[in-house]
Length: 291
Image 1 (spheres, rainbow, N blue to C red):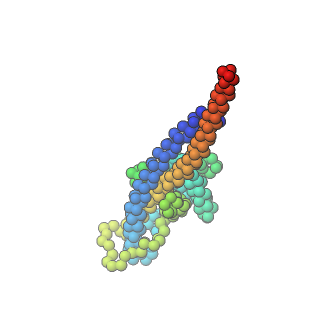
Image 2 (image 1 turned 45 degrees about the vertical axis):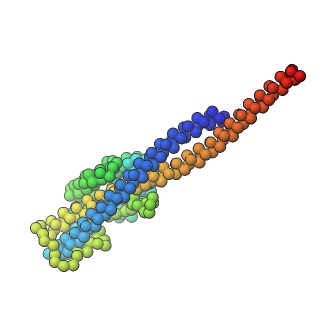
Image 3 (image 1 turned 60 degrees about the vertical axis):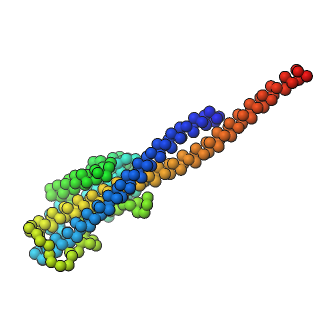
């Protein structure tokens, strides 16, 4: 490759490096926005979890038991909802999420339905021959997380109320460290009573609804909070994965540009040396003729 070809290659890679830097900046900005929003989403989920604990305690006091299914009704088939990425350049994020969802499906006692949210994930399922329902696209901005969570929760509870599904598991990417993440499986419905779901000591809260109706409404609100938090985590992890991929691409481009620049300098030096030798070779006959 001569100096002109090397220079053209350097110009092409320099333009690609500018695109990568722009994508890296956008990914870093959106990841930071999502991380800030996830703090509020986590508090929202914690508040609904505490409210659910108090409502279940009221139901237990009235009816002598507190099964979560009693307030929500019964259904027939489990469903796994996977929150994939909406766009590409995320490394192995979607592959790891699909593998985690398939592990959850294998552990289930019977056949399950798989629902994929995110364009790239649905395409991956088709490529790997995995049957998955289309759950629609994921939000492309933090402001779209709330409406997307509301829409998904309404669809799920409509299917639950109609007896189409019995339980719902969420599989999504959760942040770990600065740019790290890992697949997370969460039982969405019936909700699990984990830490923070115990009723607060003191007087019971004032209410205007029967305990069973109150529990049913809080369960739906808690599931909405969990979906909102999961979508926020998925959004943040998608951009964290893209940021990591863009940083790796930027390093690779810098290394290649450095190598090409050295090769270009060497080629230029060789061309200059060759021209000097040609000039010297042409000047020798002239000196002999003058002599």
